[in-house]
Length: 250
Image (cartoon, one colour):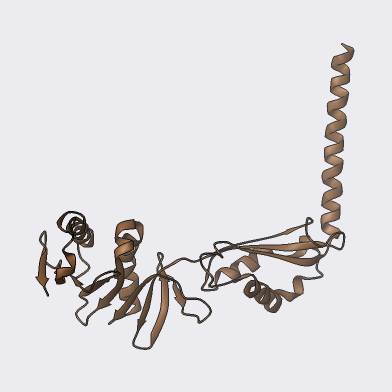
């Protein structure tokens, strides 16, 4: 009986201590002011459209007033919304914390950034921009050049979003095709010509309709028809015709 009673007392004391600690932390949080900024940009080793310094400068310019404010009075959602309007940012997570590199001087504003990932770059007629899988446009920057498929010719943003995004997304999802296709040219009739990374031949793709079937045929040609070599003998590979491939020798 005594042990049971002691057990109840210990549990009760632990609960009181936890409640007291939470109350103390809440009071401390309300009294603590923001004096630091912690920024983390994911995939920064692979994509460098935006970096920590860019985010820090943006925060300093747009929301410099948060520094010196109490942590509980900072509207982190507003800052997230502002960040997610920037072209290079796909998702932003912003919160405040007592744990920081500021020691006992105050708390910090913490910003986690996920960059958009482009799948192709349009470079034609004075236009130069990237587009991701959701059809979001990212303007070209001299700061960083992504190694993605280059698209030229007659390309409107509507065509890029509605036609090229699903087609290039399909290429991007297939390791074999991704390793083969380097460029896409769009003519005035919206016919596509694919330019491989290796070799001098041109792949006359035609309209983007039935692109899954056309890519299936192209993969079969490379893996079965050219299994023992010989692909360098041809100057064009024509996929325009349904369920057949026409190759033209040099």
